[in-house]
Image (cartoon, rainbow, N blue to C red):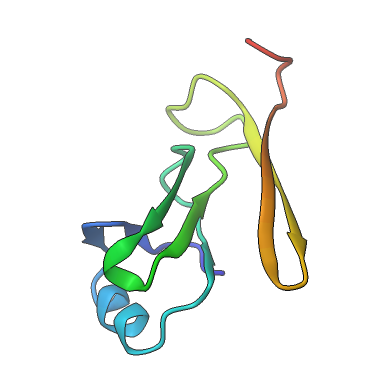
Length: 88
């Protein structure tokens, strides 16, 4: 987990090398306020998770967070939670 990681294909300086050297199973980051979840094949299929933005500051239109369920060390489900109400 880190605040600023960039995103797949456009990593923050030095982050791509760190991730390639020791890829985590799940990478949780933020900063961009852009909700994004994807598997990164180039990094041993790491699960990249950016929950979006929950605050009032920034350019986002919606407040979001994610609920990630992990069972026996494996992510099994993820839900997007709209903090302004579903479909807001």
